[in-house]
Image (cartoon, rainbow, N blue to C red; front, side, top):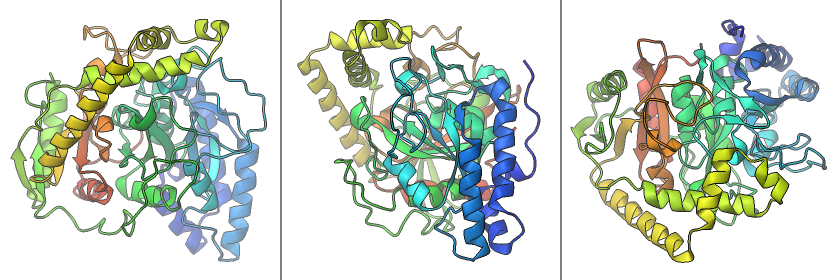
Length: 471
């Protein structure tokens, strides 16, 4: 396997830097699109980040953007910026195959998911669809249909999942922005493993359609080269109501870019290294996260070691997650079920054996967890944890071989609790281990305090704690 080369200077640009160059006439959206498309095609054999790359369509969109910039009439906040989309989200003109043989490429494919529609309205240039495990069911990215997605920092390692293709694409320079989804960590896990920024907004801030089989655990969110790009992207994706999502919350603030530069002085920060001794964190991961926490203190935050008051909610999460998998399988015929990823087929079988009372008990546990975190955030503005207890492990496995766990939830105890509570949570790269593999620090705030998460993340970038994305 040939490893990809370093990204060019142009493919390392943030969205904001591209937009500034378009405004000054120093760069054309067509030049940017060609560079990103070339990069996407270059990395694909080694990383397998893409299901499809739409060179013809992207260049046509870029030429239209170039003409708008020539007339000084940009269409929106992201006119001409290359974007990739996880292959769980509908994208007009391109099949959405969900990593599964059970989905046919035939059809009109004439509808955008809400987040994609908002990006299109703001002039984004769509480069391609990124890989996902089948129906986004696990924390690594491989599927029977599309194979294994690999980490740009070491292609023998996993990119994480389930938005692994998006994280790998952003890290490797194949577009500064990508839309991912997160039902148990699926934005934050791969962003942490690949060394980019990823955020799960408060549930409902970004409308989601079609609805996920995993219900209200799932959020759509930005995956970017830094927090400022994510704030811009999130304001676009959340900028308009969409009737197709009954659970969307109205945006009542001025957008998450407001106050982005306000810093962290005076904020009350709780640092939980192990969720009260419940998680065994690798020493190198723990050290990098402590450095990030120390940086927040040096910037004026009041930092205290404090653990949120909850036991591992994995059993409740499994009930909800496995039930969702059962719903996926229920819609398939026998031949399609037999072609599923064996792990997905296994948890679907477990979910099918659960009762309505099991499900309602899990909902009760979820509500209690939400109550406890609501109380916790009356004292603390932000909770800081490692994003993951480990760095990227060998590609092609659901769990690290030496961990002794059966399912992906065994190594993601910091991420899925906050899908249960629907809180905003982001991962910020905060260094690497001795093997050069990225480490992420997770920032969590109370529901609807998305701007606060981004403000703290942006401060870490400003302090130099969060290194530049990419390989």
